[in-house]
Image (cartoon, rainbow, N blue to C red):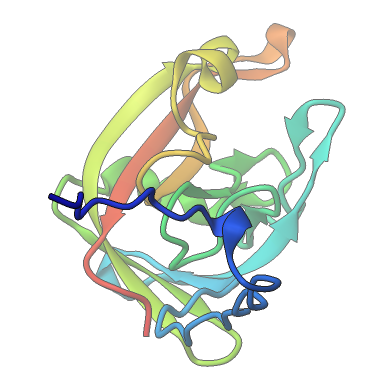
Length: 183
């Protein structure tokens, strides 16, 4: 009786060279991302958002206290991961209250919207409002995290003002989650 089994053939034992591999093309994405140029807070207050860089380990926010700064090392609005970080002054000795003084009245559940120069926008729901000591902001909080789920993180000064120590001892950090995809 003859055996019906045959030795399996290996790819190296084929009759010729392997066919070339197919080169795929990326699928079109419907995800919209944008650099924020305006932030809308509850009660209709809006401020221009300018790019902000890190200098000597500190985020350099716009000098005009009615403007806020988007950290250019953070996620763009609509990115699938990472925090979109926007910071601004609570006040100034020469200009009075800053735009982000309004963060002191923001509550869990409020809606904050980012807008881009191209008309795109993304609404966020506030999930927390916390006061964090300045020395713990970069190391003891996830405010600058770029690896997790997407969040909007708004930062301003808070806590006690200490003239001799150079300013406020804490930061107010508002965290919000996207209410959907950017449009």
